[in-house]
Length: 169
Image 1: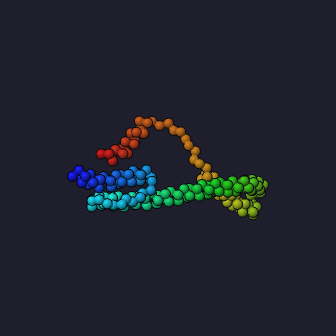
Image 2: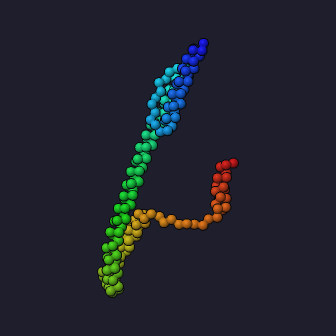
Image 3: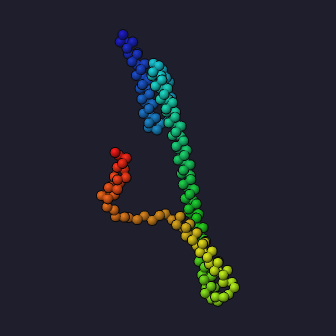
């Protein structure tokens, strides 16, 4: 009877131990290896369900890693675009300053009734637009400036409590 009881107990504890070891290893990030289902019908069903769950989690993990890699690549592309935008803005801004100065000087020396004056004034407006666009590019490429603010912690907590209070009740 003792031998039969020991064999019966092992037929349950061995697969359960394998399942617990596999769950622990999988939880630590190791690749999951399916367990051979043996033993009682209930135990086989439990192991099968765990195998399916682990396979689903493995697929989800791979998808998350793929999406993370895609996001990192996108972030790197955006950083490159920001650097490019900054360089282009600086390259445009330098000659723009010279052209603007020459245009301002020409407009100051040109009599009010001169026929070419409206054309030069329109050129000046278009230079203003270009200057505005380069400023926007430079603002986009430059990291935002951080500021320290003094806050009343009590008021901050009270406001936060007012926001989440209805959800807690």
